Length: 67
Image (tube, rainbow, N blue to C red; front, side, top):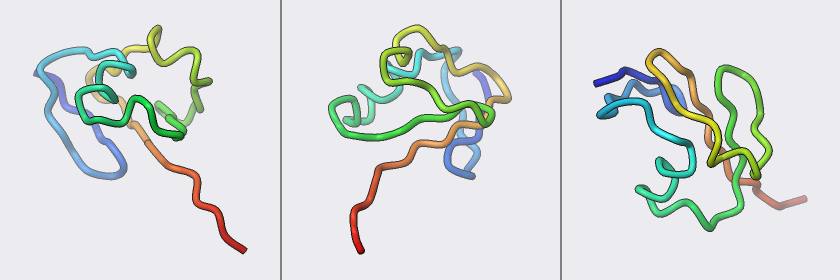
């Protein structure tokens, strides 16, 4: 088990998890969103190559339009 912070809340994951797998498991893979790990924003093309690890701080946000 690893402990991570996602959008300000503590979560336990079974182990290191690729960003793309985390998003797929939660039904978010096909949505327009941005992901940052430890303050670094990931290009969407890198979601499959980046792994969430113990102690990481993850932010997942969806763009909101308005005026």
